[in-house]
Length: 481
Image (cartoon, rainbow, N blue to C red; front, side, top):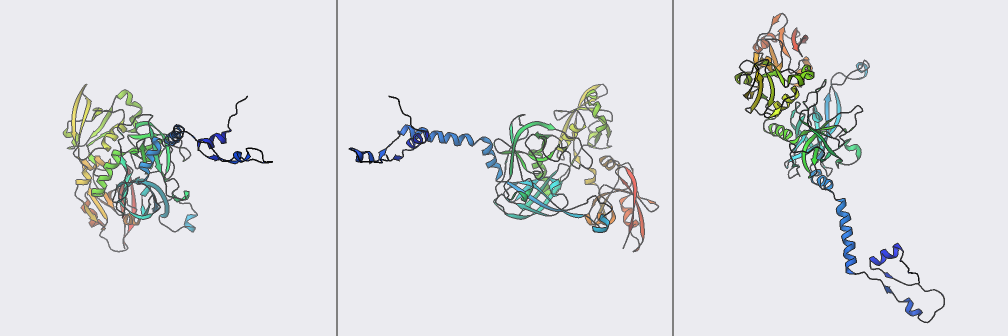
């Protein structure tokens, strides 16, 4: 007699221990009442346990390390919406339809909470020129934020919201990343356009570490020692965290290489150690205190020759600076700094970028036919320690000295460097930070103290100010009211 197998639904019902009723139709026959009685199909305890184990295994297989990493990190990811004023290229039609001055634009990005009292790290380019910043928490709450400080050189900024007991990220290390290990990029691409505040998650691997990106026109930041990943980083992801498979944040999503504006698998993140160091300095003092070594090296023009040079050629040493005191001379070749081989000037810039004032730099130098070791003890930038002269209330000047000339790559050997200027005075006068005032009308400027007297003119008088800007001499006319 052929054996019968229950259909798949019947087997499933049996496994669940359901009660099946036999349906009897037609005439009653002997034993029919017995046929109508419920028949219970039961399963053994072993079968129930096996089914439960299978379900548990299935759920466990879905809850991967990536899922756990996202759950751990996402709670501290926020969306940042920025209202800012930016100079926008103007067309001839703008003069008919658009008022003069900077335009108000809306931008967005991502950040992550590093302290429970509402301190958030993001990219500097996210909040540049911000007039209003609104942070959206993962639960959808909108909070107005204050920019505590920005550092364009490292592309790191810190904002703060007035809220306590917020969840924070868990910090990892970028120094022990392995090529090929999984990483997760989190952010808020297109901000509110996606309809909620939950961060978007993309997954990839660490493609490379210690990537140095050549500066391009208009780029204020130095993207050095970057983490490269193929996890998609799209518009709005800037400032979000890059986390490892443990949910530990190892970097800050910052930039991409793309010919289309979208991700093509070449994303870059700032190492978390650098981001937190910069953030700590901003929280303490509102700005970053740069370390000064007092030497220049051959730059992009020497990139093709670095293999034959076998290091970085020193092109100038500032008199009485840290490098001069350490015994370095023009023409020396730096081949190693703090144990790191120097292939080109970007490697040297990467070493300097992570130095604190007072740190020592142990360098190996090829000099005079031999190789020697030198120790450079860094100091403050000459512009930081120089005496400041304030004119027009919001314009700070310092004298150009050989040290400041070397620090800022100024061609003029005298004049008054604009160290700080308010945005209002800058827009009204056309002057910028970094300009060097070398003359007013027919008078050469030798010191910052002269400028105050030369600007002391009657209302309505026009004066011509001669400037060195980006190595070129130009001028602007000012009308005093």
